[in-house]
Image (cartoon, each protein chain N blue to C red):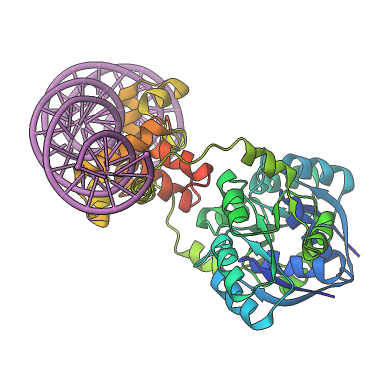
Length: 201
Length: 201
DNA sequence: TTCGGCCGATGACATTTGTCATACCGGCGG
DNA sequence: CCGCCGGTATGACAAATGTCATCGGCCGAA
């Protein structure tokens, strides 16, 4: 019997997953979480065989949860589920030692099989997303450039970014300019969009 | 037996919903769609009793599908499911004659009951989202202002917006300026964000 | 019919952004 | 130890954006 921990922030979807996987012979859902930190706590307590983590969760996302799971629940294999096929996500997941990675577009019928496969120590990567990740180029931005871009999300003016980061406005403009150039974007807003799409932000 | 049509773009989630609702006595999933237009086509053909539509779908979203369903499948009650609690969505849904409206944060156990309730001709509105919608003020933007904002999404420069919309750059700036003022935003990018959040975009 | 609102345009102007050169500091690899 | 890179800062300039006043046309409501 595979003891499964389920983490997904939308109750409705989580409940549906429970229905889908709970009906599966040989799989038992032993815990449910709506946030990454909750998942980590539960995993430490319940010691599940496999954890199914959605990336998009409040407070702590599924990727960070996966990174921490290795420490608090060794032996628990992780399968990541994501709605957005950001190429950078797969890379981070691999570095965290995740064994399974599927998009929400994946056929539902295959999910149970993937969980069993991962439980046996094998890997499963959504071929769709793997292809995107292979085409991925490394993020060309420096840490500070990323910080600045992040702070610029949502149309925040330079003056406020400078205050938030504790930098001079000129410096902020320099970073943003560098980021825009590296990403070949029209302006910082397009750069933010692009970075988000690549999973760098 | 309630004949149900399911529309949701993510296969995995759709499959999970089928598992959740298919196990429910008195409910039969007679069709599945991954896009709004597909849902409309299937509804016309299958004449389901209830259609469960996700809003976030490619090509045609769930709200537009709901509007069209009234024409091609009269008598088919619609339940809308949405991941984002945009206040404007609920209003549009109500205007389309939708009988049920739930967020993806809603407890999964209640979904079947809601579907039965709607099938009997009663309504069900997620109280969480209803509260937001009551606090909603009417969208203060004119149609053209909305067009311009929409075209501005993602950091598109004014020059390109003007070309796309077939307007002079000055006019575009006027519209954007008006929108920014009405929404009390710092700049058009923040205005886009705000309008999106309110479900106006 | 008159008024007001929306559409579209222009011109002028202030402000914000984007770009570039240049400079200093600190760490790290050769 | 030196050179390079990243972080931070300034100053100057160009380009994009935001704001405002004003104009004319059109249409629908009073």
